[in-house]
Amino acid sequence: MRVNHVGAVCAQALSTAQSMATRNADLSEKLKAAARDETDHLAWTQQRLAELGARPSLLNPLWYVGSFAMGWLAGRSSESMGLGFVVETERQVEQHLDGHLDRLPAADERSRTIVQQMKADEARHAHDAQQSGGSDLPGPLRWAMRAAAVVMTRTAHRL
Image 1 (cartoon, helix red, strand yellow):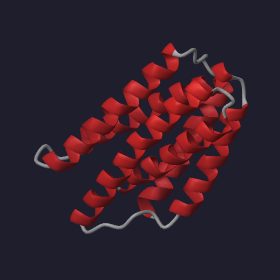
Image 2 (tube, rainbow, N blue to C red; image 1 turned 180 degrees about the vertical axis):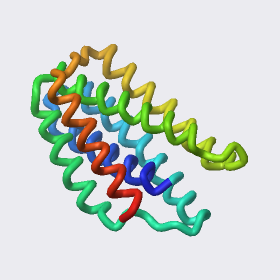
Image 3 (cartoon, rainbow, N blue to C red; image 1 turned 90 degrees about the horizontal axis):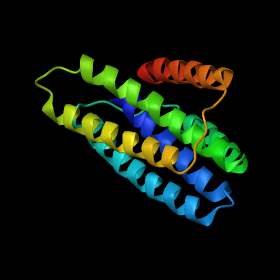
């Protein structure tokens, strides 16, 4: 659950920064709505961590700052690339959440419910961004995003 909490920290930073950096007022409002969803995800995962007797990642400030910077850059890029960044990010998060659902014990209904709702919200964010004109990101950028996510996931699991 710590990794999912870090994901919510990062997603909130990405959405907030991108909403501030974009020049499109309508897109900014959509990104602010996504950031509000991520605030819910953050609260749910924080509460679940407390229920499980676990702590958040010690590196959350670093994750937030790095994600904010990436979100800002995405918001300042072309609108289609910025939306494509949202699409790719959400798709990768969905894949992570699928894997987490596979590993969660069937009896852990509370965690499963949280992860399933997060997954549904992320799918909606990706769909909305795609429908709003998100373009496919170049392969090397998608691969770099995946590599960064692997590093973040493995590190957040431990720290």
